[in-house]
Image (cartoon, rainbow, N blue to C red):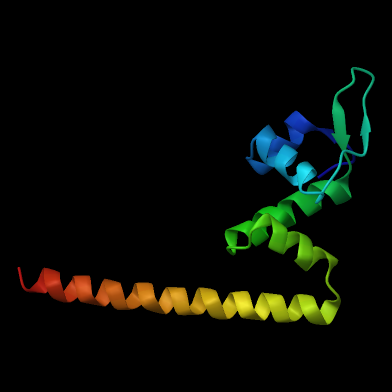
Length: 110
């Protein structure tokens, strides 16, 4: 991502809506780093990367409050939070795999 981009450009690049970024701003996770001569909000590269990181954390199942805590945590606390979430995702995956096997058995009986 190159230097500062408008909200529209950030949203297009990350395939998200304005409301998503506005929600991050409301939660105190990001903020615009300036405005251009037309008054459009600008976001620097660091903020754009942070928005992408927040999206990744959301894809892992973290809620915004948890992401805020994660980003403010010490390195050790963050590692523990990420490990716990990994364990949760692994358990979830294992549960889905069991269901898939049961469906396969059910289908073979038809």
